[in-house]
Length: 292
Image (cartoon, rainbow, N blue to C red; front, side, top):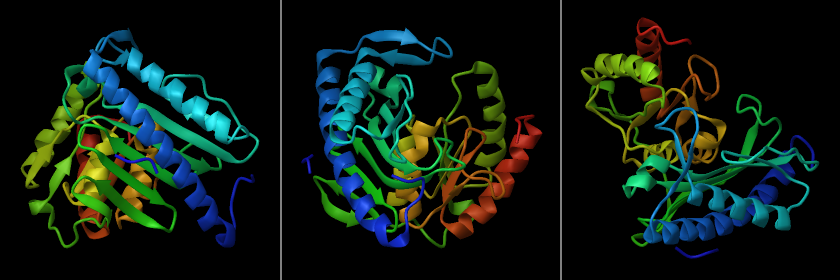
């Protein structure tokens, strides 16, 4: 890996603003990912649990977020901040940074090479239903993969095997041939119901994958490693950067019906496949007594 105002923007100002924000996000995300990788090599210690015993936070999560927050505050002190591990703060510029310091913390704890640093810049509300994402970066430090996108600027991958490769989702994939990524709640009760959804889905698609990082799953759809992704229970920082990267690669990203991605549902796929998959996933959630 190599480092490289108001609530809305006019079309004339959005592109340069997005490019500037992307450059900053990329530089900080790469540096944070290198920090996270060093701490993983030193050995990981659980700092606390959150919603359940399975929902862990490591000292590296906190150190990574502190590092990212300090760098952003130094570069853009008037911006807001919304991160997983610290208190959200509003800004006066109209820009908020949405940060997951380690997406896939359980993978990180077990040294499974599917975790990432995720940084996005959004304008508008900190509610995903109301914000507009301007720039997003997701970095997997183990594979050296840097996924990035800016609003209207396309999505790209930089890695040891690919220099600034433009991303595009898999098109013309029938539902029965779709490889679908998903994930599960930290709540055992909810996981059981999600298992019912997977049971109903697995016979109608090629197969299911559960990698353990929502940000990387969304980037995998953008890259074509997955045909689709559908998961319930995500937080804003889980999908802020990945959803933009996926959209800029040509995916339809959203929730049920016309809703935007949220904790209820985040679904991503090429538009034709999404049109087939969304009503099926919605019906399976209804049958499993999961709120829509």
